[in-house]
Image 1 (cartoon, rainbow, N blue to C red):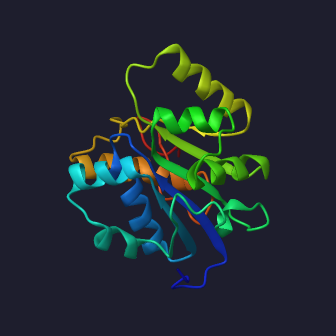
Image 2: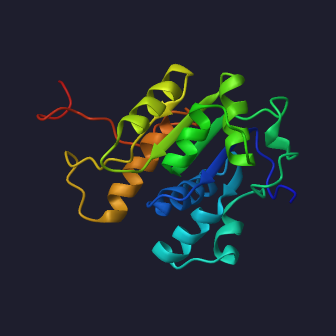
Length: 199
């Protein structure tokens, strides 16, 4: 699929089979609003199940949110090569299966191949891992990805900013994730301390 908007920056967004499909969808919506990033979307079969179950969305609803949509089976896609420049990749949510594949370099589909490329090219890879509680294999896989340069970012809600809705908690997480890529002015408000800004 051809891009719909010329952009100087590119981000890969993958949605896999863990609860929290809203994070991937909100990332796409936010990038669309920013208008400065070309988004490349990947969704696993289990990711689609969660999108349909949790959000009641169809492919017709989701695909227009991205500039480019890739099949997870298309290992010959542009994003499978390090020569195709991107700012990095976000897997949101990231299942434990996907985490394990990334941790062990098991590039069996385009999601894990693109993640492998992101790491080998020393670009930023952010995994919004979703599972609880963690077992030892999960923790070791997270350590391995961290040692390779990836960022493990469980989408844990922050309560210090007193969110009133689930949407506000999701938006806060998405803003903090995107701020890791320095796409422009910070999206997440900076903490000013309990007593407000210093005078």
